[in-house]
Image 1 (cartoon, rainbow over the protein chains, first blue to last red):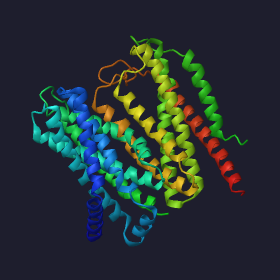
Image 2: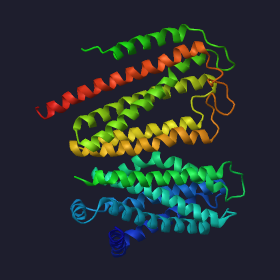
Image 3: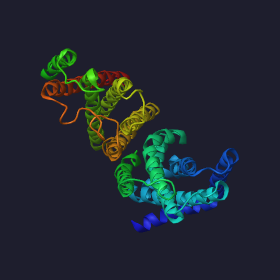
Image 4: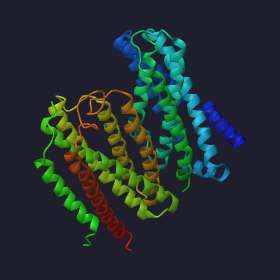
Length: 217
Length: 221
């Protein structure tokens, strides 16, 4: 199992490395988005900064994670079907997209600091939240991109399916992030934090249970 | 048409609710006044929606374990009628909120939770109608139904309770909590829930049966 997951992960990373242009494409997308925000808004004040950060995260997640299943062709799925178990396959995909999204989150954060100023009091906590947010968004979209790929649809279907599900996650994240700014005291911070963690566990659990059914033709 | 006992019961209970809901005595409360009667129409819509979605969820699981297309059609029918009830619940709620909260939409956490839940199920319709192949459509919509339903539960039951809500009974707002719901209202409210739910189940089964006929026609069975 571990060996299979590692092999699949290595394959995804290799593909990523050989098709560097897509990876740098997403990076450029992030940079261009932040730059446009900077042009339109200049240095944003803290609550606006927070909102813009999470919205950027959402769009980056849709663009980067969408590739995880949608880039695989039908024939390749059939090949994987003969050599791996569905659980190993989805676990490898989850790890891969979480890693990719975390890199993108940190990059976005860096660019936000550079171009939009930094209203943060607690940088470390916000960085941790950005990584957690990237993880949450990427696991939701990984499973949804599996659905969209099986339905032979494009990334826009994935976005339609995903928006209502990630909206509460983004709400929780932006509330959690308020703690890292000077403005307000957030009531029930740990409660919300635990809800987010439990939601993540629930989504991973559902992906592991449901993916085998999508997998079979 | 076979008229089963529960269908008869649903007709009786819905008419009972319609008549006594408007004519019965209600406690007079500040702000709420006569709008308290909305309890018989608005709240049962949500109960009904949740129950119909639960049926759809169970049928989706049964489809995945048996691959019987009839379960898929049932699951889809319950989901679709559940969506109709969610729209009705939203309309009755917004109408009520216009007179009690002063505006139809006030970003109340429960309203938001429900709006998101409606979006999830609208997305279900988009997903389902986008797939041509029957078996594939059945499988993917079953998977999505299970995924959406399992996430909807924390959305509308847990999250709104963690923050203050304008809804009656939350955060010190006047309304239908244990003290307000007096026995006269209970006598109408519980039958109303049962009556509307049976009606919803009845409509769903009719929808399922017409869908099954269409399906059989398509394959000349």
